[in-house]
Length: 97
Image 1 (cartoon, rainbow, N blue to C red):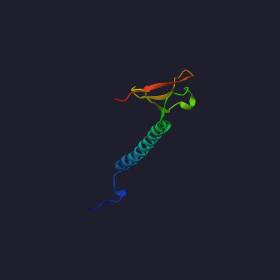
Image 2 (image 1 turned 180 degrees about the vertical axis):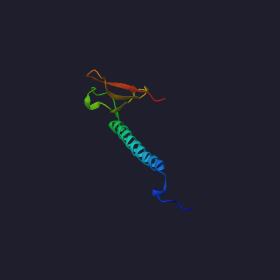
Image 3 (image 1 turned 120 degrees about the vertical axis):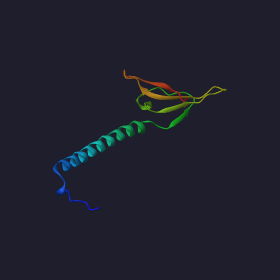
Image 4 (image 1 turned 135 degrees about the horizontal axis):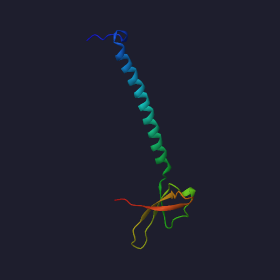
């Protein structure tokens, strides 16, 4: 099959092709931006640290996971440090089902 050089195609085809290239570039930029946002969210989480007592919730514990180790037959409990949105910090229980 012989391909025609671009200059032989009608102008409407050229415009559609250029529009698709622009759309593809914009879509690629949106995808990269979203992936960066996801990466930033995930890299904020830290590894799980096994503890016998939770530290005081603060800016430094935000996003960190703590496994409160159970003793005497009680179950372990997983917590994550969060910003409460009202100027404070707290731990929330992470439930895995």
